Length: 416
Ligand SMILES: Cc1ncc(COP(=O)(O)O)c(C=O)c1O
Image 1 (cartoon, rainbow, N blue to C red):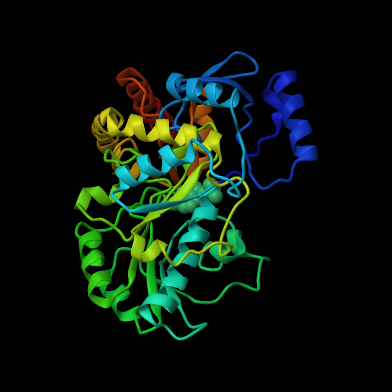
Image 2: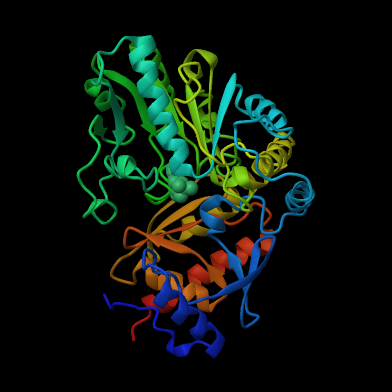
């Protein structure tokens, strides 16, 4: 496979200047496509040369409600004129509404607000361990958490300690102990890994970064039953799968399952501001006491104002319904391409992972070819590309995406 670089030789002077300065002065922890964006509205973004692109990454699903969503921008602007940060040393008049709204949406008694997704995952780990010691009675220092192969939960040292992605872990040891990894979607492996020290099972109901990988039907229900039976917390990382991306409010809803802890982020901040939280019932959350956990920005009034509006929008149900509709279009468009350049297609809501025949092209090459056609998407694991357009994308937008993928595959299949 040819190594395709982002050398900005074929781009405008303005694009080249932005890329050069970014690469020179910012760490190379990403390998971006050579496009420099400056505007966004709805499902579309515009680059510094005025070229429009359909955004099929949507900030890794942080932009479920679209770029510059009118309602969210209005709320943010309004709040900027009042109060943006108090720290939790004091109460503020927006956190009360946000906490009530998010407990209503999740059906849980309490939330613990943070900022990034990784911080919320760390919070869930800490709460689970403390619950294990104080409520379940696990001997001090022995708590274990079961995680899934192929997971992605963020980038902190503890979180990468249970990642099986070499690139994400290499050079970062020593790692945090207390995690046991089992096969994703295999409830008997989870059952076999549980012992008296197990406090939680941490999982993604759909593995997004893994390539939109779904567990077998029934896994979530069986896992719920197992966790209840063995007195282990079921901890669902819905940071990417939640808040309407999968066609339901939470991906766990597809099997009518309620975890003990929801971990939320990304779209909770409407793509405007980092907002994350965990939600749990009082018997779990009450292990958190003053000083035992915190964050300078967690629960700040600006975040809370935006998060409250996000919940209000989700309570109307229209984004979930549109996500499911987009999913129907993606499935109908991509499935016929299996055997015509694709080896597998996975769709749930407005979220699709396509596996490209690696002899035709890599996922990166597909993403580059889509970029030329005005569509932005991101590859993962070599030959997979995932699509997660904002839920405000039109039927025509989705038809354009499917047509572009088909055209690229056809062109790659033709003999040279
Ligand atoms: C399932 C899941 N958990 C956690 C995270 C980490 O979120 P953040 O990048 O905001 O720390 C991500 C990010 O992609 C994610 O997809």
